[in-house]
Image (cartoon, rainbow, N blue to C red; front, side):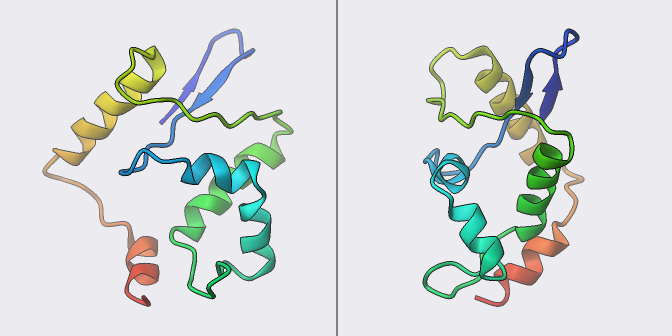
Length: 112
């Protein structure tokens, strides 16, 4: 979910993962993403990175527009307005009866 603030001083991009861990933040902040790209979307253990299409999309959004981006981990359900909104949208989408199939994920997941 992307929320663009009218004054454009702030741009929020929420990424929710089921485990609530640091995976997405660490991918950017610890340089994992650069390594994955260099290794043709393979991790250290040579297994494929899941969702390379989504990683490429987020990377393109950041680099193509020249945004200065800071990735931070936010504790879920801790009264953070943006996080609570992301959670609400994620739950609504997950409960929807017309979810689209993520074909790129399915291709990658079936290789494991």
